[in-house]
Image (cartoon, rainbow, N blue to C red):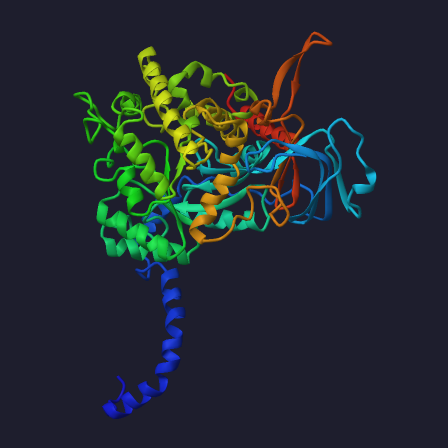
Length: 557
């Protein structure tokens, strides 16, 4: 017990120390924010964190793949698709110094020999890309990592992404808070073979105190999450006061936001309500249709429906297609609201594609070699595996989904034509939807919706990059091919404007009339991330070996 002192001496000391103490307040506050607010952690907190991390995949191994970055890499004679949506141009020589694009030099015109005098010199490494095509690396804004059940090695998804030209992925979330931040940092240092990671987390993850139930706690968690490394928030259809607090605090701290406005909560928070509060992006379609219903506010469900029965949930959601009226007053007003609020629509159409044609999706050509057995087993009809809801799928279910896609695509195309930002993402790892390949499939679906190939590629590059950088109030650092940008690039030996299918890591096929035989063509040749050149075909070989190793370890029958 300390002896008492007169108040006068206390206040005198306080007045002397006040400036110094005030200068320390921001540092103290930041240090407190970085700690989980309840210290020391109790058993409940530890149990929550253990549960959150229980299905994390194994961390990626140290990087062995890729060459570079180089002092001066020159990619020669390539045709350039810059990401802004315009047609290819070329041939050009692209100069990369370290991890940034330094120059793009036009060296001729098609069908005319290249003027060697125009070519940049001094390369420490050259790649002959004569006749090939270069575009920005793809940016997928809706991914998850594998789990111990379906894909226990992080390396599997990472290599699938890179092999299909994806150089940046936004995890919503990848896995636990701890896993996501640490793997993001390892990728940023190029310690692992992986795209760039952007970390978006669900409210309440990471700190062990559970989901925020009051606006005050919601704000507290956002501050804690920012201090501990997140880039943004993945939200649901939260209660209005909590949604407002989360989004307001997110804006103050320069974090991004996206939301899956799930069916169980959309009655209290649809997409019109959420974007009015400041939500940056809407993923999937949840909350969008509900913002335009002609005669309902909430979808009418059949008697006996149960949202925990996934076939009912995913089957019935497609029946919304006739609850909205294209080009109606509500349709047009909602589109205008989204555009005025500068909202990104991140539809992930590929996620639900199985619903309109189950047989096609089950028989995609890449499954045999590149969908590993544990992932394939997860896809099989199951009452417990998320997205494995084909318990008794019918023609009627598929017809409903096809009708749904007609309306959904019309809405997306109209928003794009208004100047709205639409992106190309996958939400893969469920519903026969294998990562990497599904992102290319999303580009094809955008073309089906009415986008030109250039607009589809722009959705997966420039517009996705803008969505990531906009909350930070920073200019994009990747997403287009121009001097000063980070060297996140894709080189493919066929023209994606002629056929988006050539962007699949496996390429595509066609009949060679000269030989009368079917031949493979296209496929990503090189994926360049941060100036490091990855051989996409070798990455696919590695993925095939992962599947072979799993099959070899399976008990014989």
